[in-house]
Image 1 (cartoon, helix red, strand yellow):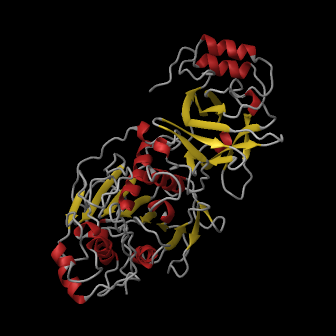
Image 2: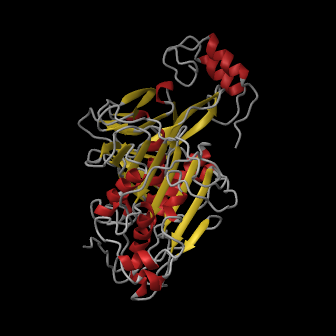
Image 3: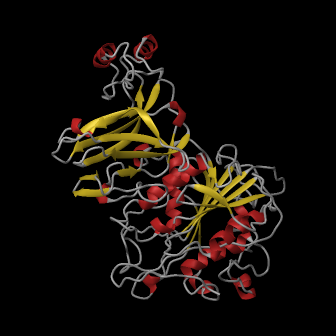
Length: 539
């Protein structure tokens, strides 16, 4: 049986979908390392494996969770399979996963159905990047539908393996990029027929949604890519092409051999091929398609037990050498994704816990408008890091009062860890709408220590209290490292900052000057400022 769904648009679209799963084989787990080695001396090592699908307009299809189950079975059933719930960000235990519920091997089916296809409002631009941001945050600070079901830290002292099919290959690359910026090692990234929707593939169905090409980032120890392509055109263009990835171990599959069985479209056969290297039984089934005897005899000339998943930490097989990965530019993956609503996109503010406001504007000047119809703007769940010594984290944004009436309404900024916890109003993060200027001005608030090294959602909301309801515009959101004592945010701790602190001396609630967070501006705050006096925030 086959469960595949197409999106047809005569001039603009096509079909995409996903990949594979199954069962079997004894667990052989090796330590994460860049060295090639055989599985003759396995060591016990905790693993985290994430499987991401590509473009889909349907709920999670059978192959997706079945691949996760097959991976856990390959690890001997020691662990658990979870489904990522993009609505509340929690991990839900998959029924009948065949695991013992321990945390030795955690396998996650990462569903991003809504933002993987045609989004509800605005352009599709940037949604792969935003989903990658959400994935990396989930890995660093996970929560579970059943509290305490698994570890919150899914990256430290674990062999992390990210697997993505089609657009999902771009997604896992973006997640690995953010982990690289944070200095967190990833044991392996596997892309399966990666298909960035960026206007370059499968004309005339070459949709441009700004997807980034997959890359091998510096903290990824080993990376492989399995792909095939049949070119564009009215007919071939419907079967999405994959691409080779520079600097990784590439395996190109034969279109003629893939045609001997499997799915109708070769794009889906790639994840079925990989599934056949996870489940080593004679005729594995991923819940959609079975692997026949003919496919077993032809699809894997080298042998299905020595390629593909065999090279994972769980598989324990030898890995061909690849060159080192590239260092990512931190500016290309900011701590807060899409703070300026690029091209009018709500990416970063829709799905994964986000609540998008009206996004309007044009050119390079896009902004979110809060009014009575949409009073709240919520950013996707994101990870707030712990700043290095001498630094703090600051949330900054531009705001203006768009309506001409002065009101008693209030603009406030809050942070929230999870949906079942009340949002926390940040100190000094409430402004009378009447006090906001008619032209954009910069505002900043400090991130309290309680939110450091946590996954959070950022709330911006107008609370209405008057009969005449106001309108507020917001843009250029950012979460940045700032030197302690840089009160005016100009990147330098200097005389203006010292004057500002002395002017606030002894007062309560001046959050920018209250560097130690004890509720008042005093000697300890002055000491922190003087320790950084004359320093400049590095670029």
